[in-house]
Amino acid sequence: MRFREMTVLLLAGAAVAILTQVPARQQAVAQQPTGSIPTVTGTPTGPTVAVDPSLGRVRVYSGPSSINYPAIGVLLTGVRAPALGRALGNDDWILIRYDGVPGSQAWIYALYVSLSGSGGQELPRVEVPSTPTPASTPTIDPTLAAAFIPPENATRLPTFTAVPPLAIPTFVDDSGAAGRIPVGLLILGFAVIGALGTMISFLRGR
Image (cartoon, rainbow, N blue to C red):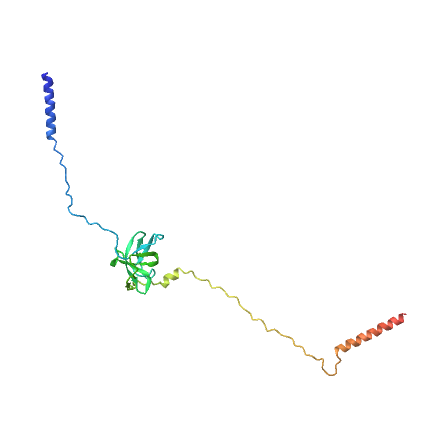
């Protein structure tokens, strides 16, 4: 019995020694922020525009024209943008607030969007920005352009020979000349002589 008791005591002592040497796990506690966190809402106030649902998205430009001004972004369906005004002298373009571009403003074609929140009031008129000047004027090098133009082979044109003038014969009416017997009278005389000869030959044959 003593041997068993000693064995149990030794095992218990070894277990206690092992547990005392393992360091206790420390739980890290993060510092929680204090105060309220600001939230950003995307619902603008005042007059707004929204893209027609049938289009999906519409490009916005730096000025009231898709030809004279470059495109600077797009406005997607379901997004409402604050309407700031209309182009002076052109009701087809609306100035909107468009963050992320210089001045945070852009122009959109009015027929592609619907305007709401204006309360029936007209949007203020806005001066049209100046047309941007191109950074460089493209020029064409004549020598380089000539290298891409195929040479044209000269073709001989057909020669033209003028037709000689047409000679039109002229007839002189000599029927009224003096001392000449008319042709009709000669034919009639020969016919009478022939008839007489035929009659004489017929009578002789009887």
